[in-house]
Image 1 (cartoon, protein in one colour):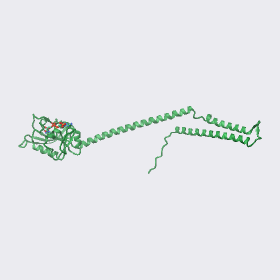
Image 2 (image 1 turned 135 degrees about the horizontal axis):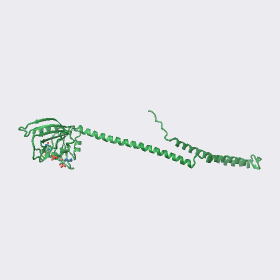
Image 3 (image 1 turned 90 degrees about the vertical axis):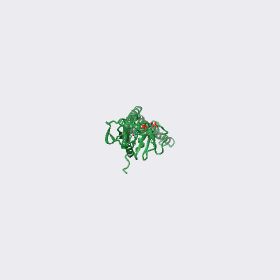
Image 4 (image 1 turned 180 degrees about the vertical axis):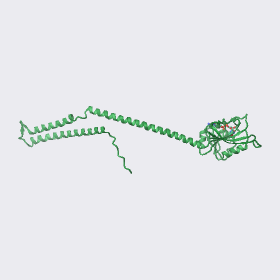
Length: 310
Ligand SMILES: NC(=O)c1ccc[n+]([C@@H]2O[C@H](COP(=O)([O-])OP(=O)(O)OC[C@H]3O[C@@H](n4cnc5c(N)ncnc54)[C@H](OP(=O)(O)O)[C@@H]3O)[C@@H](O)[C@H]2O)c1
């Protein structure tokens, strides 16, 4: 639409001069060669004209025929021409050629240096932009991760006890109801042992089970992964995936979770064998708490406490 951009000649003045000189030199030599050929033919023609055709047979100078003088004059002119080409105009002698060559090599080297430094700059820019893109991708991954509210849900005693012999230590129906209410419709991430503590998968939740076993078999619909990162990745479509235990998985995920839903059971359990890690209050802010006393359905008093990361 806007026409082609005019090409800027990449050849410089010195190179142009060298080419022009070379062309001039070729032309000079060509002319000398033509002159030589014409001279030979002309000389033969003059000899024939005088001796065979008898033209100017009577014209002699110092006893010699005229054609001899004509040839000599022409020979002199040719010699002058020859002299001009190879002596007077010998502008492309060895020294001159060497000088030109050195000049051109120097210029090419300068160009190479310029290109090298340009390339280096480009490479630096590329490396910087790659690093920038990687950092951006990392940042966006983080954002993606944190846009999901990774929530730990747990019921723990005052001493952080959470289980014994791969089972819960208490039965608190309101806690189970709350667990069901909060986790229904979501992904629930758990260790293999916790998964095996259920009689069957919990309804209306997507189970993600973490195990190091490569051939672990589970019922259809249960997602098996081999590490916590893959578990979180498998739940990325869920805006609030839950980590539901047990002890090993809680320990690994407490540093990356965004929210804690704790049922604090107000008692200690000396014979427990599995524990929740200590909650560092400097990292977690309590945002809500409701307390329930013990009653006929609940052997222990307990509090529902919600924490958010500071
Ligand atoms: N009070 C509560 O709210 C609550 C909630 C849940 C559970 N619990 C209790 O907690 C107890 C179970 O907890 P637990 O600590 O013994 O077991 P767990 O955390 O449920 O599961 C441990 C298993 O998870 C797999 N695993 C752990 N980290 C892994 C990793 N980084 N990569 C791959 N696989 C990994 C391993 O499975 P493989 O051995 O197959 O490799 C490991 O043996 C039970 O008593 C249960 O009742 C209590």
